[in-house]
Length: 282
Image (cartoon, rainbow, N blue to C red; front, side, top):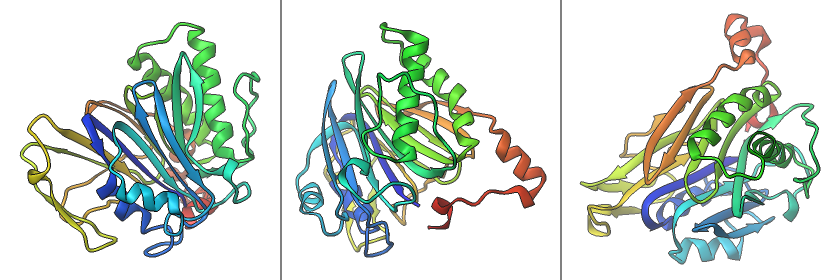
């Protein structure tokens, strides 16, 4: 299963601490070595780095671990390929322009027989189920709102409406951002926490690194971190409920909705129907 890392902040913040632990899972503490990517928003645009090398071996990942790029919204991904070749065009996160903003999407999961009808405005470059899902989400946003950029709450409502149907095809965990906020959805594994004043030390799980955030922050700072598996061993992480959509803005959880995924209900009533995808096995 691929792994996701997202960060949403009240003030521009670097992700070097979290990414240092996260990237260890690309070949040292786990085997998610089929490419990596990370996107840093700066207002409407973003810096996007992707590589089909693992985040352990990639010189680009080494740059990210040591260069404190500050951003209010960051999405990172380490890949364990289930669909599509191991190449650059299949490396997450994916990026598209909509309403004069860059939209960034990364997916953890495996969607079976998922070939949605697309309008042609947003077309996959690679051949992953993930990029097809991203193009479909953007298509639906345009179909609903046309050329007028909606409010974040309207985007949230539409994502919560259409994501369960995609999840009928398999595991569908994702992070999505347009630079204003971060939308996250989970069917299986996602966790989150918020670091805020008074800050405390944090110890990474995957590497022996500790940071005392009280020494490097201000009372105005607040950071929400979203990840597939918890990154630190001395902080309290909250697991997403299956089918939960959460909107993070200014470093805080501002909205949450538990969506109804019919497949999950069928599997709860009859465990023999449970579909275990390749993504769930990694």
